[in-house]
Image (tube, rainbow, N blue to C red; front, side, top):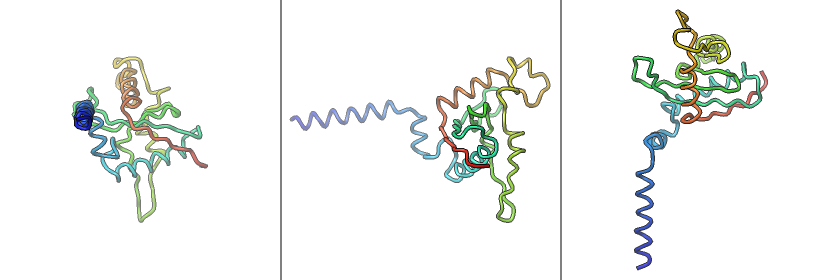
Length: 165
């Protein structure tokens, strides 16, 4: 009798755990490399991020929080990867970070990636959308706060140790 009650209690606990599990947790379980699309996507983006930290990182330990987000201001409904790098005071468009190779040799232009895929939170942020004007690189503070919050709360934390340059 006791073992039957114990089995019922265990089954109830399992059922509650299944019902409480969020869709985000289920997505992460289905893809061990979430928010990245695949193992290869993860490896290629981590490779570029490590190179960027090695070249531009100022601290020995750098954390980058990567989250997949749908930008409500963009008319596209497809999610995109953003990365918040607190030590660099920046947001990166991680979805566009791909290494380039020619004849088996890496030729990734990291300076170009820094110029095009990075938002400097010290210089490139203005208070409101109206302050952006005709700029192609300025972003508004609410947008940056939304991205940073999502990266910190739902993002995948990547720790990169800067090695010698």
